[in-house]
Image (cartoon, rainbow, N blue to C red; front, side, top):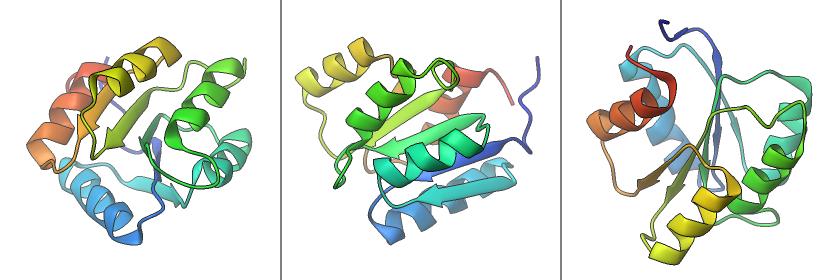
Length: 128
């Protein structure tokens, strides 16, 4: 099944520059419908009202981290199947294990480029 490049993608990061970087990479890859949220709390509220085809979230944010957002999403019957990619500057093994246990679909360590992002998205959604 082909990836719908017009599906809504939610980018969650408390750092505006990182949102801009990820959004630009997604556009380079062909995604058209990209929204953003400044933290997990805002993202979860947006997810209640929109059906996102993919969430790309930073780990470290306040007041709700990406990890807490992931746990909320996986606990919500309506949202639990949403593909979720975690982005972090830390490659600590315990974080990766915790995210996997919480149901993350994939994990990206900063810094990364379009090719890395495409590979991670392809692993989650399929070829595009």
